[in-house]
Image (cartoon, rainbow, N blue to C red):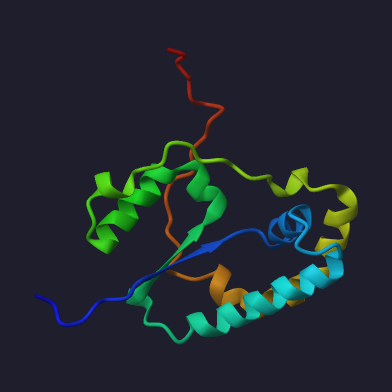
Length: 148
């Protein structure tokens, strides 16, 4: 019997503009600039904290890639966690959120100016991390769907 537990972290990343817009849409705040600063502060903090972890103790998932291809992500995670794939694969429905192109232009224009390349460099370690799970992208346009 183990006398200690092993802690592993899974971080889920998403396009920063989508994060802000979803917060506005959920009415967490009504100010795009205020919400942008909140998200920026959160990402800076997360970026600094992830540097303190041993690379063996965490994985990073790109949210949109996970939604596009959950099975391959779950296979990687089930092996990493040491949990059978069948126990992890309990999703009935996965709802895909909006992509950046679906954000209204008045929000998107502001967000692109606010989160310029210099500003995004503050959390480079997070978004360019070697622990991001890399699986093939699923191309729904090429897939034939059978209706039963």
